[in-house]
Amino acid sequence: MSSKYDDYSDEQLSETAEMFSEKAQSMESQIQNGFIGQEDVIRKVLLTVIGGGNVLLEGVPGLGKSLLVTLLSETVKAEGDEDEAEQNRIQFTPDLLPSDIVGVEAYNEDKGFYVEKGPIFSNFILADEINRAPPKVQSAMLEAMQEHKVSIGDETFHLPEPFFVMATQNPTEQGGTYPLPEAQIDRFMFKIYLDYPRKVNERKIIDMNANIMDDEDFGVHAVVSKSDITGMQEFSKHVRISEEVKAYIVDLVDASRSPAEYGLEYDEFIEWGCTPRASINLALAGRSHALFRGRHYVTPEDIREVIKDVFIHRIMLNYEGEARDIEVIDIIHDIVDNVPVR
Image 1 (spheres, rainbow, N blue to C red):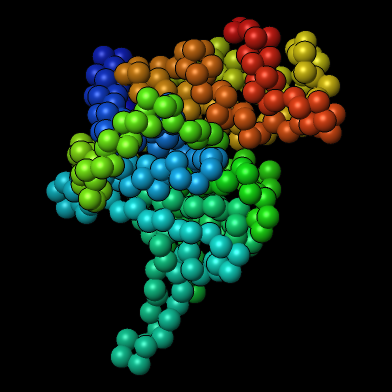
Image 2: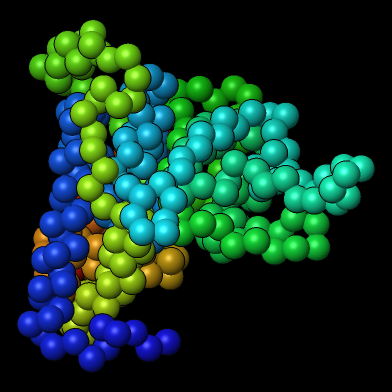
């Protein structure tokens, strides 16, 4: 599919990358006003948005995951004929049904049959505690997340653009949960761990919340439009990746599958490695990172910056690895240390 960017000169591509970089960094600055001490998480969420992906966020309750999605949506303003960005929180529970998410075909004597759209018809979705819903519900959510469309009755509806899902799960509570299968987890571009804030930041949170009455008091202003975000997403696909960087991506992924061939220290502890989705998402994330930095080309350093969050949920330890408390992050570091750029 052709794009206006196909005919851009290097100078035009560079100027466009710098323009979108400024917009993305403006979003970052605004969100930081209300989401204190989590700069790394904010950056990674924005990289996922730019890349058109979705994120799985793991952390205990009470760390502000709902707030993060709210603040993200508040950075997006209405412009021209566009409506304001909409955000929704879907609380996943054992009794949730797929129709509670996507919508249902209903009947009314006055209107006859009509479609009642579900909460998934929003731009920014928080799928809270997604592992508390049964697999059928998880599957409905994740398929909609990937296809950007849903079927209700005999009709198919496209979801609004931009469309971004941040799913969460609590790592400490396993009772009454339905763990996401590896094939479903593989659909997320990033898996991010949200930790407790540092003490100095927690003091700032106390001070800030003493004066907060509603979301507007966080001091977050709209700085981009929905078309700005879809424009970033389109342009990111045209951020250039050289054949050398593509080969580097493939080698990194292959090292997770054939660790002995690359001399990995932890080769005996890997049950299975990354799927081709890892290669796709590593390229997408690398492009997002380059664009965020104001460049229209990807470097190996861009790939190294995002590899942890792309690989962390895609490498599975075997029984011996789990018994020895091997960490997947150590395997990722091992891969990066042993796979050279060609």
